[in-house]
Amino acid sequence: MADLHVSWDDYNALTEQLALKVHTSGWQFNQIICIARGGLRVGDVLARIFNTPLAIMFTSSYRESNGKTQNQLVISEHITMATEGLGDRVLLLDDLVDSGVTLRRVVEELKQRYPHIKDIRTGVIWEKECSVFKPDYVVQYLGDNPWIHQPMEVYDEMSPEDLARPRRI
Image (tube, rainbow, N blue to C red; front, side, top):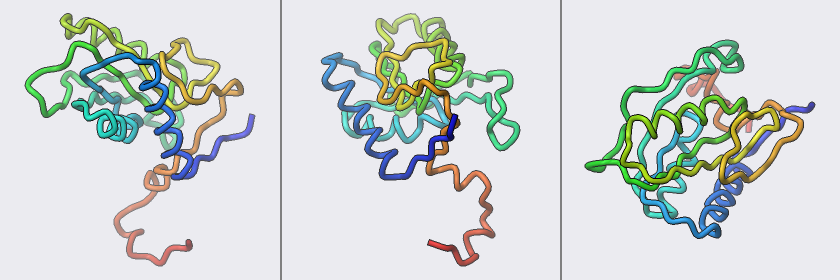
């Protein structure tokens, strides 16, 4: 199993493909919720394309070994949004579904916390074969379960002091 290395150009193109899949499905939604951190960029782009309110739900499970070891899942108590309330037809977005635990649990939490929600559908760029949860919208299915190196990960090991140093381009 080789790791998957993704450039910014590829990441942006894949995000646009996800938006197109949602659009061509014909499903109408009135709220986007992204799972932070991985889903922040995906959620922002789709909220702009669909001109739909964006809400953010924070979760955390990958905290050790530079974010490569999954621990206990923590789901934030509140959703951050700039609207009065949450819509009732929700598109829940993340960058990928790995084990599937996070996406499955967040869907369960949303249904429990917000009983007015009539429909929740999920979208990701990548779905790994090992996932126990199957999203509604997927751009790439990864049957060999690679570790995905996303372009923003260069910042995981960068400090403010590093910005002052000359960089190789």
